[in-house]
Length: 507
Ligand code: BG6
Image (cartoon, rainbow, N blue to C red; front, side, top):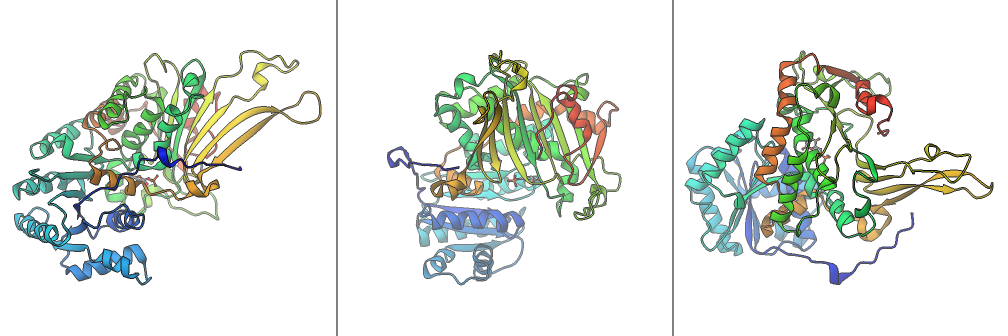
């Protein structure tokens, strides 16, 4: 599609954070290498990191500063030689080795932070990024507190934590209470990387910076909303975590509920962190409760079995490395949710996510109601396709709108036109920053808007509690269904859509 995009500088607010040290716990881990280091490097390349930003890695492996810098260089540049500018940037990285639960590690960290404050003028500010398993959140924050690294006297200290924020409602409440002994909510940055995705952020811009959508954005004109987050990959090497979590905890309770909230929330009073997160919390509170009696009508859980196509072999989930052969963990979830408020009452929101589906594809499809009456006899209203607005989160980020049009020629012929726009169609929009880039930047800026507030976490756990409990008991009404790897998911999920009279969109 031919896209014309007019960049208006006067409507661009670019914040560049000031001084500070980014401290990465789990510096030799996978997330650091795959996401955090490339994100920090990209911020540097975009000119968004002040020269007063330094990075300190913390991990158990014994390593010198120089060895760590070598690792950093390999993660961000591969075998390519750094330019002089890049080499100078890598010099701003340093390393502290130690056990996460030992006070001596934090004494060494404090010394290192004092050194970088001198060397790079970080002003004593620190953004602690805990790229760690959740059982270490509390011990690390406790030790940071013990070493007086969380005090904010003339400087700031913030802590970014990665999901999972608890395993269920009770553990989420306990985790929060444990952390609150040492840090305030204002210092706590709970990351949900979906909120950092450009296309997810664009949902709000689309809704509230255009006059044409909002009048239609309600139960009067929208028939149903379908949110899909499909992955082609299986559990890979993560069974240790994933088998104890499952798709509902891994994807739905956090990422998908946040996306649903952005689609369905009321306009916030402003785009500041509290106004915005108030609306998210309000929306989650309005989702109709799940009860033991309705679980079988609104949920399907599935697990992948061996692929049935020869050219795409894949083993069943239960034979993946470190997965118990009797595992009941769901790798697929489909849900039908309702939002009990004036705007959405009785509009179904269908959510589905899974591993080993045909391909990676995340989208939101909003289907509008049929036209009320046809003037084009002999065609009836039901002969016309309903308009569907599709917001594609990944890949091929963009949006599409289907419209009924007349085909040229014969007097009456109706056709469906798909208007498709991809970010990549416009050079100016094609350079989409990674979610972690945006979130690290916001952490440095002290902007909590795109971080999840504690009340949203708890409300979401509360919502799914009955379902998680039923699955844990293996209730007969909520059986585990099986689907071949790379299929569209369990056939039972079709039944969720008005008893099978609608179809899921093809992945
Ligand atoms: C993570 C989940 O939060 O999100 C993973 O733990 C999942 O299981 C990933 O694969 C998906 O993220 P993205 O950005 O690739 O859609």
